[in-house]
Length: 130
Image (cartoon, rainbow, N blue to C red; front, top):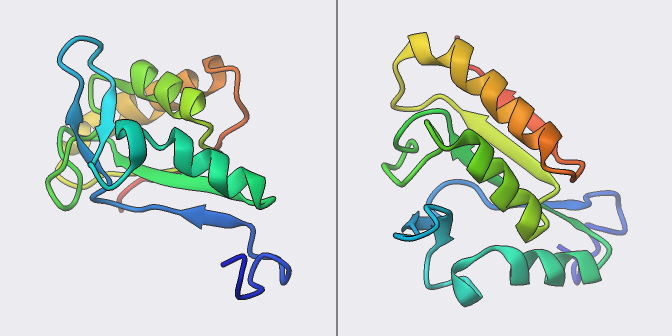
């Protein structure tokens, strides 16, 4: 995006959607990134993107599994919000794939509260299903 001039044209956020996660750390329960991401986190990617003057966005779901079946945030909203903040994420899309609709009214506000409490300004894209 940067080398091809998209950032200069105003496209400032690089977003990584589903399939970046590989599970949770057995001790901390934090999300872990697939081996394609250095150190099992998105932090080095965020640092690289920030060094280019851009922002990093990522994705989770308000369920136990994402649309593609990877680890998601249901029951871990505060921890995941803190993890995204620690990694330097600037934008978070949260969808409702694979969830019980009755949990939406609980989970989405929990994620919002977690993001607010994280100490980092993270744009929250709440993709609440119809």
